[in-house]
Image 1 (cartoon, one colour):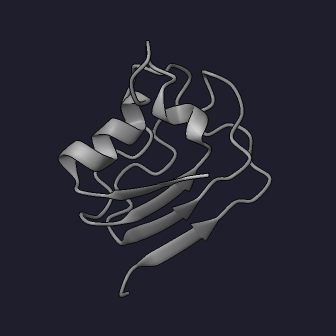
Image 2 (image 1 turned 180 degrees about the vertical axis):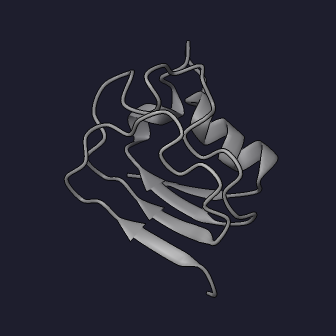
Image 3 (image 1 turned 135 degrees about the horizontal axis):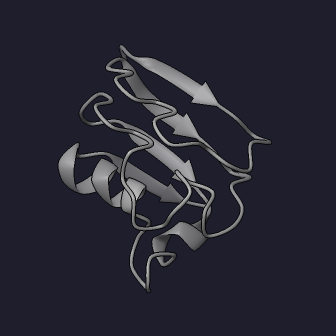
Length: 90
């Protein structure tokens, strides 16, 4: 593990572009996220984690695996599909 980790055990929302261009960020822990708009204000957007490191790991509530009309939240999908991140659904 050569990158940075963030551990936010009590954070309930994360704003648009919160981690934009954090190219060394490789591990994120957000167990307290709450609500359909908790990541970037909309389940379909994908700009919270824009341009973070490739091949990281995130831990978020399992709600975000189905919060976008039955599919993954857009930000989580971006991490997985575009940047190759792993997800641990809590």
